[in-house]
Image 1 (cartoon, rainbow, N blue to C red):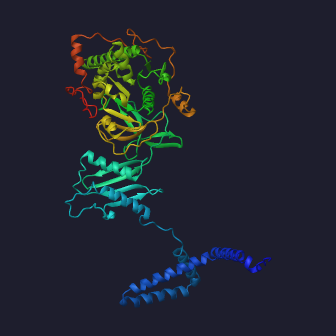
Image 2 (image 1 turned 120 degrees about the vertical axis):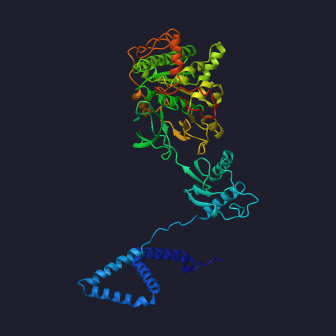
Length: 565
């Protein structure tokens, strides 16, 4: 039996209904767009009427009569004034339109997801911020988190970016271990991969956690605006330092907060130690320091790794030597020790004669030693002295002789650093990813921020003497002869290099002629008995007339060293 077709109205009814709904929706949207001004004015008139009604209800009964009389007088004046009713109508419509406009919804509190995260942080802090004997604990399981968290802010992913925590007074916030546990917990619960700063207000029992923005990596090597004796080690947070320098970045010129290291006779931290992982940017930092030192002084470079990272400096004006081998390094450092003694003796003789120090003793001499542990192993295998032993005189008396020593080493070889290096390098830098214990061992203090697991080259922490621990981003100073260097960075470094000397090939460094200098180096004066006494007297003073103090001796690697003099 053949099936009968359904009536047309039943087969096409659903399509017609859907089409009718679409037409009605389109007409409603069009009407809303056309009538939007009228809707806005109507909403404003309703709000104005509600406001007037509330004002009238709040007016005392004894003042309603005078108020009504004043309103009637105003209406009469407006009605009798030329074009008064028209102006009054326009003003009323304008006020209604302004009052009835759609305002964006202002978020007044956290949403459900943010509340859940705050509750999780609160419950995680309960074991650390509560004791059983507390009659009214601020932190308790199932308690109210709003009493402990005063301020909070979240990013677009729902992770906290700022959190103000009030903790009980009996918490041991003066112990670094207790504070480290809280910081580690908040770091893990708030989201890894970001750098957090923790500000402890021990007097007010308040902890403020904030997320720090990443330091810019677009600042390359350039001529910084500094005076002789100042070196820009890198850049840090704006609120951490009080000085900014104009720099040229990838997005234009700006004022960047800089970590400035001051050297010279009046410096309290005349020497620098840089520690990092392989590829963390220690060699790039030493190149940056050399480029900043060459306009005002002479540079000696000793590279223990033997990779040729400083080949761009060879033969340049002001570069006395670039040594990679053991024999050349020993000869160069031995000359540097004798040169330091000569400068001290010459300056002492001039001071005793009432004359200014000779010009050749006032020109800064920079000794850059990269990876001395590699040279130490070679020297031990060959039965020769460790090159670090020759640094004792420049390190101990370099401040008075205008000699600055910069040593770069890797974490796995820090135990091979000599006592002289550990004691007299009061300026410290840690680059690359490192555990908090490693950072504390080098800098002598814990940073106020959590180190990130993955950081770009040149990122780390710096501490000058007994100052605070600062975040640091070293200006990009790669090897211009490396094929992996970008053209912009290569040109920036090559533009800073001084001109080559007349003789492009430097003389070999031997024991008899330890270095080929850009200018003739005066021969060392013979040391007599009186000169020996004068040397010991001038070696410990940095300012003429200051009283000598005994040498404090070597200090542990993880504690700051008191300044000499």
